[in-house]
Amino acid sequence: MIRFSWAEAMLNPRQIEAFRTVIVTGGVTSAARALNISQPAVTRLIHDLQYVLGLTLFERRGTRLVPTNEALSLYREVERQFIGLEQIQNTARNLRDGLSGSLRIAALPTFNVGFLPRLVAAYMKDKPGLDIVIYGSISSQVVDWVATGFCDIGFAQYPLDFPHIDVEQLPSVAAVAVLPEGHRLADRPFLEPPDFVGEPFVSLAGSTQWRYRTDALFSAARVTRQTRVETPLSMIACSLIASGAGIGIVDPYTAAEYSGRGIVVRPFRPEVLYDIGVVWPAGRFRSPLALGFVQTVRTAIQAMADGEAGSPGSSKPRADAAPY
Image (cartoon, rainbow, N blue to C red; front, side):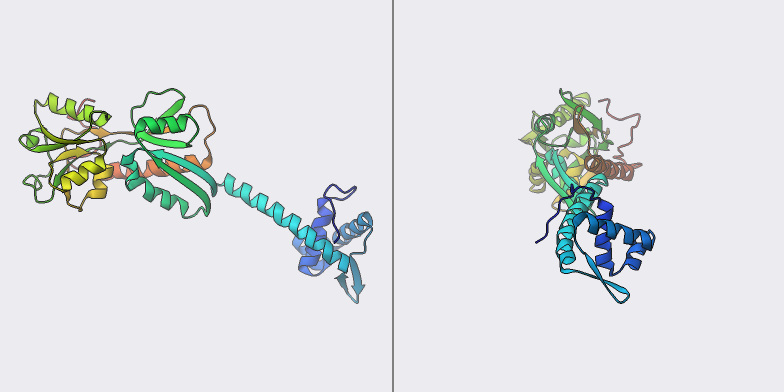
């Protein structure tokens, strides 16, 4: 088998391209059209290639140029080279256009219950070369994964004050009240702190930011709740509520996943905003894939917030919104 090196003396890629095109298209005239150069220019490139290699690549039979056995052997090697170059070009193009690559995402369970996976699936549809890995944990762990470079981006409860990260706040959405189906308060258009008097309350655990905020809200309203059960995860809270363990206040992302599955979701007043931040590793390159996905998430959250505008549980700031 004939082998050649791209570094062969006097050999240049334009000669190889002309040779390959003549083989593929079947003649000098069609090759000239494909390369957008003159027919004599193609002939000259082929002549120079034959001279450099010391091979007869084509024989004239009537008006046609027929490749020799040496030319066909050479073509097989050339084609392997071109396929490799095309693969490199395609990979670079896909990386540049955000169509391929890898993305490691960390998110708190609130996001991972259903909201984020749906966005990931939609984002991947037109990116066949994209590989995504999703991790879930509490906000502090999400931050650690991003800060150490284990993940490219993270979604954690805002505000965040940690070293070695940059944080961008996403649009705010309003927390909601959650009740079992058939509950006496289910017909209310919205719930307020006094509605919780005498009701068993399902609370998020004391280690969460959300627990501190809801405690402060009820304290300001001078309402004492009967906390019957605590859990660190809002999806467990919704399952408990669906089973009749009590009523509660959770983020709208989780509530949306459980709505119609044994629970009723109602706006809550005074409005309490639930904030998520995008976590980036400080000072590091942000890939087009990561930037594009974050924009997808931002747009989806904004659509959720806009959909709530004007309702009793609107996420838009109001004068009577809770001051925290």
